Image (cartoon, rainbow, N blue to C red):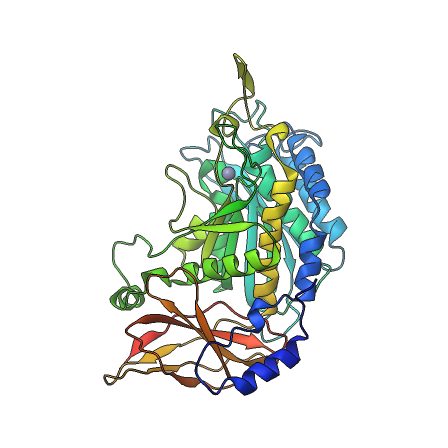
Length: 453
Ligand SMILES: [Zn+2]
């Protein structure tokens, strides 16, 4: 805990010095003791226990047994709910969230699809409606996506993500955050992302402020198909411009100014990489600038489709002998998604990146709104304006910038509690973002400035 700095003092000094141009690289590079404590508490042993328990239900196929207490998806979801209730007693609001799904291509009879949702309400009135969602899918499948009876251990896909979400809920519910955290384990991912899609659709109908969503799907193994080990990184899939038929005006403006890498989802990914790598020593967050892998999908997609910023965590190199495969031996080769191929220490590292990111987001103010870059006249400076944030603990704003070919922010300047600032750098040559920062030094993701004449 060598890099913990008394934040308010440092921030005050930096704000005082922020009049002059130049990079005051700050505060945000320091670590918060609370986030360090959360990251430290993530336990590979508990994660291993959760994975083992989930695998013990034999199959968690979406259409499997719901009556038995020991086998099938019903027993699995009752156990997950009881875990949330046990570890988050009095703090987590735990509920089943179900809907009856009609017959379709991968659902052969009307089926109750049930998510298990644990909500940790935010403690600040001005931030409580801002929510961050983290999910894993607890359903599983084997070689035949219609086989609701045969074994489908799903240790990696996706007991790994489910175990991470349970661990996050248990550890993080012992802390307070300004914004609301939603820990969700969903069903029917393997039948067409139906659990996540139903929740995302209801969130859209209710106009919930989902400021960010992460799915953790196949985060369980550090060994790839060739037997190589890579436990030093996780892939973070981040969609850019969505593939819509008719482009809305906001996307058109983004593209017109070269902002295709500055969508809310990409800003969120940039933030997760920054925070995750700061708090999890020696572990890399490798952003992949696409929605998902070829031929695959995940529970972030229904959130993206409804306009929410959403990301997918997945291990760096997958072993397809251990996904969507019946448990069997062919010669010396063992197939199947078995516990023995899952590495709880690796899952814990990915969970730590999630934990640090969620904590940083939920402690920080909202990303600034209505951020504009004035383009009324030709000018070698950059005039930025934005709407004032509402949080009572707001300290001010931070302007960040980077070369147009750079992936991560390179320069920054704290500018205090103002809603306009002129940076002596040409808007033609760099990308800008504006972040909100609170008195403890918690920083929001950046907002991209839209041009305004
Ligand atoms: Zn999966």
